[in-house]
Length: 316
Length: 316
Image 1 (cartoon, chains in turn red, orange):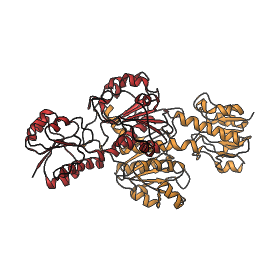
Image 2 (tube, one colour; image 1 turned 90 degrees about the horizontal axis):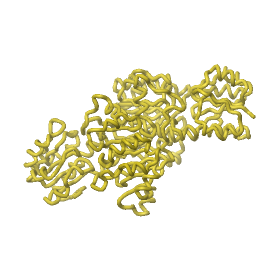
Image 3 (cartoon, helix red, strand yellow; image 1 turned 90 degrees about the vertical axis):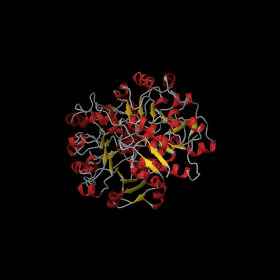
């Protein structure tokens, strides 16, 4: 029986199918240490890592029998996919079960910031409470506003669908412009990045983290944004220069932010934690029982099919 | 010039048009006291009250020249519309500008509860912080779940639109079933109230407060609901027996709640304020600068048109 090393404790339900065909090694605690992974990877055929495990050259070299790295999740910036390819090791990810839960989180953060849901809940629970009244705690309507999506892949499109049903106009910026037919079907319009920054009321980031997108949002970008603008990031923290974001919020360059990811995750800047105009989530884009099981089952399916000769969601 | 008494301070922008044709009396402070209203109503033609002002027989009798009560907002349970009608006084409300902002709030609360957005933000800011991890802070996916809407009027339909774009199935209960054509167009299905209670994963209340809907949700109703159910109320607090809701949450009869309104508003039960599985908003359904101005302008338009002989949004 071939062996699969899973770096992190997952919900057992999603592993049922995989266990029928493979010997599965999982930690009893939350996650194996790097040393424990390096020790055990020597004898396994497949590694199933999560995003907090750095699968670098050293780890790949240690996997002497490794033929597949089946990543848990859609983002794989934690894996040296080029080196894996050089060594003939395939890398897969799990795009489909991640899409809708992440779009839900992005849209939930968007509404929570714009409509001041989280801040009002917190204030209501504080000893001083909150002042009720028609002119108190006013947020921004989302209806009739313009959403700018940076990176219109699966998740971006799922966010666009929600925004359109909420009465928003949707523009996007992408490496590749969609065909006009697809734009018409999705009811979205391509704009240059600077135009998106200057005209969008709400900006949502759904692009992968690459060299090109690292610090894509820095001081010059915040300077272009509208003073009422809200930034949503459910992609990867390092796409945003966190210090520049803090300055932009503090100086009123933008109005608010909803963040599920952080540049120095799991550490969050103290300044953000003290700000009322931000809503902060602990990388919870797919943090539901439903989604966790579906992602695990999908990664398992990629492994099972790989050894039947079917390459599913291979990214390298 | 005819006189309009506005009980509560509103954003000035929305009053521009009204001031062209009417003498407008507004408070310098947040709201006139009941006594101040009773003193001034004697000389005005129009009263423009907000939902926290009780427009009862005594107040209506005091308005000797009153011909119109132009309510700010869509709910008018604060006004004795039957007595006003007896006295030949018309009552109008502002359904259109309220619809989308309230649906936004309902859907924002729904996502915030299901995806644990507000509770995670609060915990991240607490000294002990939060435990990060794949199996921590798991919420419920909304995608693929069933939404039950109680009261499918304008706001209910606007919520349904958002839910459908989020991959939810939508059922509803209403006094009057829609035509099959309209159900097909809206992609919603009528179910009896008990069926809705037993089968919906999330229930959203959008019905007016009347004698019939007071305590529509009480212990027997919570007993029928699914243990993973979430209740959203952006309509009126007294539709839900607050003590029964607290018991249902405490005993695990239901999973969570998102509330914008309360039975004893602006007072909120201490038990609710201490619960992690609820998200609480201070009657903020239309609390945006955009919406506040649009509601004010709409009420003003009802007044202007009324004296031209056009009855717009008359409810009695």
